[in-house]
Length: 301
Image (cartoon, rainbow, N blue to C red; front, top):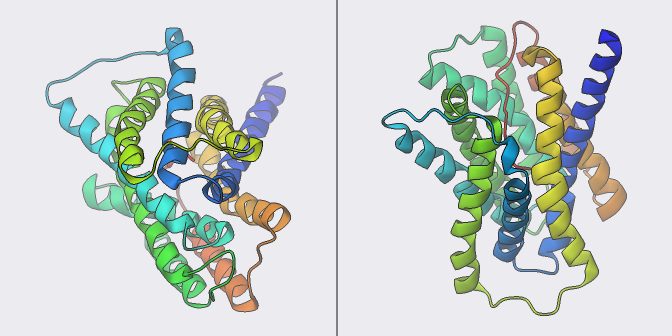
């Protein structure tokens, strides 16, 4: 029975990673038809609605004096800056390349935890981090402008900035998670995102009036299945497996992104970019050769 429960947890984690990986494709499809800020507002609003309907399962909250600073920083990192940079990234680079840059997130979190939380980092992990960074830079420089990536260097740079915001979010989440349930923290991000992106969307673009079923479906997919569904499956899996074991599944996100981008968007990587992607994965694997990696929990993708 215990082995069966672990199998279900593993299945949930794999589905969660597939949903997060598919979010880049859904964003690409939505951005092709709708203004980016309206897409982000729509997914945040839908996510907020789902959280409101499920509020009875909100979990604990033990506010401590001064927590407002950490909560404000959490919301500033994600969704505010994170989704702004990701929207800019996907307007200039392909979903496949952006997905590869996300492979850096676990290593960024590990380095951030070393700098800000004084958590130990091994030489092997540091070497893996440097190798993955070299691979990510190579991936960007080897790219050429095409219909899927008008300026891959700029787009991948924006995606890296988004990952740095996700790193800050994760470290703050780690600090707050002992006093606030994951449900409350993620719901707060959705609520703040709704309030933050609505005025920005109104200022930059008029409210879209002619939206195809494809556009509506992409936004609904992002707001319900990705923001809420992936989060729920992920947390169920983590609750049933050791965190060190569950963290390894995050490396599936760029794999799923690349697979979906090839199948659904017709994207591809050239030979040099394939080698660069292999270098990124080699760096990630090297970083996990010894010890457990910090878990990038709660990223809304």
